[in-house]
Length: 230
Length: 197
Image 1 (cartoon, one colour):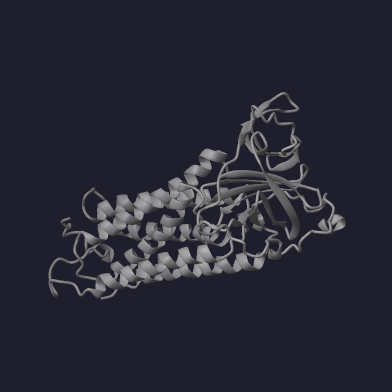
Image 2 (spheres, rainbow over the protein chains, first blue to last red; image 1 turned 120 degrees about the vertical axis):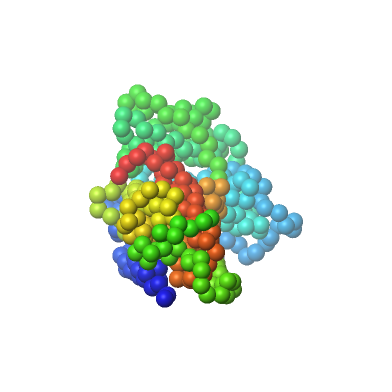
């Protein structure tokens, strides 16, 4: 006798999986709980096209220059990059380590995204974040050029290589039952932007002391932010 | 492992019979489940790697985030999996158990599997196969491996005249892998975000 119970179990799982896939595929992005804290109703940033510099590349993969691989076949060196979008509305910082990259996009008000992924040997990277956020970039000389796409909006950016204390920082903590999650980008010139989420609600973050990582909250509380590495 | 002679008749639980038939099973009895298991595991991994992670999926009402839903579903699956081990020991007579322990084993296994499927669908659909950190790498590898091993276990149940040790070993493997998958995801989630719903 062949038992069919196990087969029915497997089939039930398969049917359930296909059903959930179809629900996922048809329900779109609206029902997601993976927020990137981009506040949809009041998109605060100007459209990227509003202040397009002459050399702004098209927001597609064409933003990365035609292949100019480094002569030696090895993973790109560990480094930090920090810069701004071409329309100057937001900051982008990327940290590379061991062929992997973590990036943070932050406009200092409402839109932010953490992105992760691998860096190819030729210095190109395709990072992904929550809610379908994407970063396509390539290391060209001592800069990363590329585009960030969040919620169907695209920004081109240039991030020159930088060094401590410039870079990307993050602090997560629970203070009096409130979940705090902050991200900061410190530019080479010392300026910084950051977003501090309280229970998922984004707002401009208080200033971060780049040397110590200390953050003093408006209510007197303290956070310690640490440099982000992949 | 010796098999309790009382066990196999209970509810048709598929403890391999010890007597009758050819002494050696046809290789296909092992090969087909093994090949299916490999195909499932590799297929899931390939889908997760090739498919562009959507980052989004539906949520269940009453939960704060998809991560919380998945963590609790995974914890439920692990709970059923523990029940699996206990009821299997009963079926094999290693623990005293009621006559319906075989039924408990079958239905808790189905429940664990069906609860784990939505979690895996979300993982593969929204997040994909990732290798960025050791935790994520192991979770990706073993998550795919789990469904392969589970498929093998199900298909092996249909075969008779298997060595007595095979099902317990495969079942134990499925349980061990599920445990690691849970440790690298739900436990991490609870430790990072707190035990929230």
